[in-house]
Image (cartoon, rainbow, N blue to C red; front, side, top):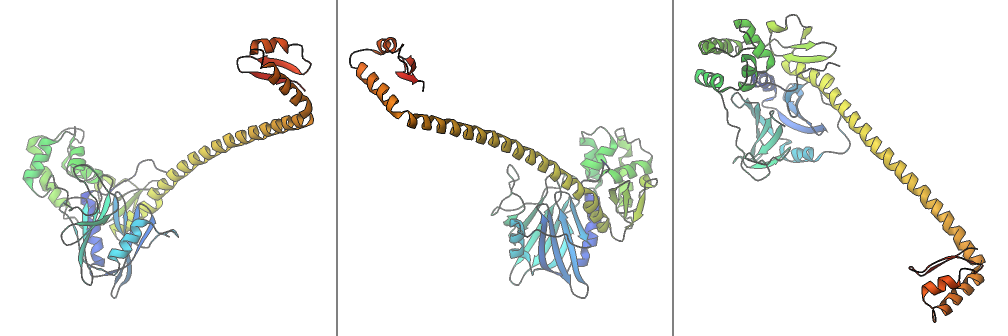
Length: 372
């Protein structure tokens, strides 16, 4: 399996996903599935078109899926929550918030309006809010300055740079701490690696260097042209799918690639064939570690059990010996008790040193060792 592959969608790529998702606007959410703790699939019924599937694979992916994965018998808690609150609601709008990796589903029920917000940055999140933007429930709580939990007001993340505004693009290049133009485009402006390479290649820039101030306008013009490119999605593959691009990129001309009907379908293939395999490998690694812990624990417990059995055998033998020689032992005990009335234990030890049954005396502990 390839060791380098796409791990999240860029804001630019997410725009193409949102275009794909317009097919389900007007549809009704008929069922919610969670095949695992990171995957949420909405089954949407669209009149005249039948069932469609919208899947979020957190923290980095959202896409229109061609099908759904099998869910476990035990329903996860967040899945139960979503079934209660959004099933049978109608999707009236789906939009990307500016140029952020945030997608908002506007939902309408019989007597309520809600928004399902999907965050595809950092650790990812899925948040359900009411008309007043109060959080009803969410995939994961967060703490700190941007605390997210049930009952608090949700605020959309502030857009640091508006890529459609020349002033903001200029500001990004002035403020960047990245040491080359490609990283500034990919990270600070949220273009992702593929598009950043494409812009540098088309303009003939050395991507390993910082961008001269007099070249920012050229970059801005190139970006606006790229954003108007017609969708022509392809998957890039080696032995496995390693990337998905929403339109043709010259920097990928020499890569193995094939076209797909929707950008979303390419993303789905990347997730199902490459990313989920990585997740399963991780689970196997964790499983192997847990098995090792259990085996070590079992070994310790087996040793402890063997010692207990050995001690039981020894104690049983001692009990049998005491029972067999009870009268002799009683005579010694009575004799020692009588000596205690007139002697201290040092004197008793000296007195018993020649006794035929007494092997030794611990005067300090006041113990007598009898050999049978």
